[in-house]
Length: 241
Image (cartoon, rainbow, N blue to C red; front, side):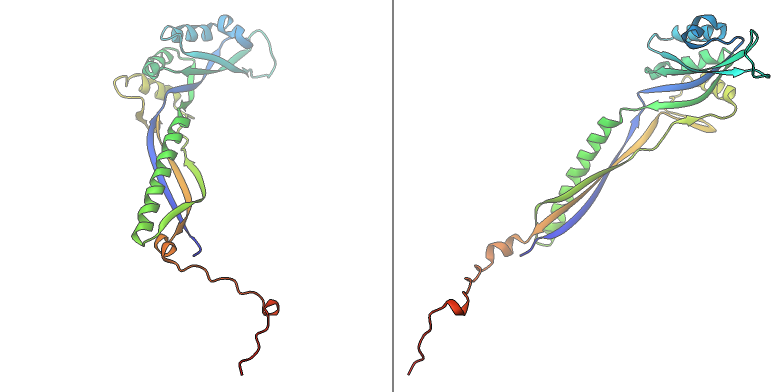
């Protein structure tokens, strides 16, 4: 008896909380300084960096670019600069303090929040659960009709991982002020018109093709008949008289 094929799909999902955040901010300076020298030579940048590092030395600060703010487009002593800075916060319980420190500086704007997650561990756990669930479902289905799982033909995995990064286009000052005044509320779910979330749902999908066999039929089947040789190779038997 030829085996049949049973295709089973199982999905497992779980909410996952962020383990960190990267804040994309810009700081307007009265002078133009390139590279790491801005940490010391730009008064505005130095003030903000100092106030943030007082919260936690674990916060990483990286100047990723400088934008020229000049009406003529020429560089001179009065040319102003806007510094693009990434603040990497690994201790989320300090995030509200960071927002509060930022509100204290009028020349800083928040442009976005990139949440950091431990996605790989969650994916591995979910796909394992989905595979186990697929096997259990296949066994229940085949047992219900008197069949048995014989093995796996193929399997595949896929994942639904939503993007929860936040881009803030307008009203950056209002967003910072609102965030800093909500220190008692979890930053995982703060509704500011633009939803700020440090949590998302990950789903893992396992698709498995099993081959199924009729165990009872195989045990009770009669043995295959012997192969009959070609008549040309058999000795001739004289007819009875």
